[in-house]
Image (cartoon, rainbow, N blue to C red; front, top):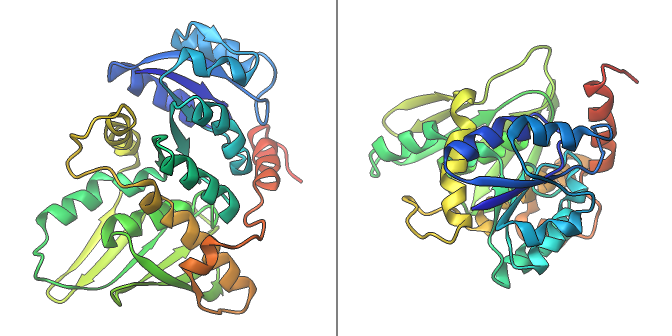
Length: 310
């Protein structure tokens, strides 16, 4: 496929483009909106990676590509960055978190229902370690519960823990309840079939790897994810889906299944703000509240990227 890169805010574009090129894709265009990088960053990035076109305006890109990858650190920009590609019927991969509000989630789902291929979110939703556990487990050995977690923050990074838990437990979250804060935010999730699992996300004194502990009736398994393999595994699964192939084994999750992670995080936020009230996912899905503030996070991210502090 011919691929366009939208926004150079994080380390992901530099890490993903070589993988995409090794997979045989042609990265043909790049655009940066200046949220984190200075003017000229797109030109330097294009030169480094052999990308032929630097777009001055995002509207120039859809005609040049089959798919776009949106890397904006401000998740509140994702819908507007994706819009010209959705309207042109091009495939879209949106980096995590895909959206920070139910309103934006509803827009992404509406585009998907109209036939636009959209994927994205946390790469842990497709990680090799969870897939290896699913392949080797005894289906008759019922899962009692699971715990997943990570550090850094509760949404931009915390979304990885939600993705990992969904990779283990599968889709079908019914409700979410905040168990409160003790250093990190602890969250209880209940599936429609009655299964129950837990998350612990947020800042800690040191960096914690992505992890999960799975308790079944016959064993306890612990997963610690190898971050060095995440991007390649995720892109190897997502790109054939975006290209229209139907050969993914197992099938690539639907957009609705992928976005359960973001919806669960929004429900956890609402539950925490309301003292631990159980929030059903159907309620979170129709909410009109603003959700997580992408612009505020992006401003902090820019300061940290420049070695500044508040």
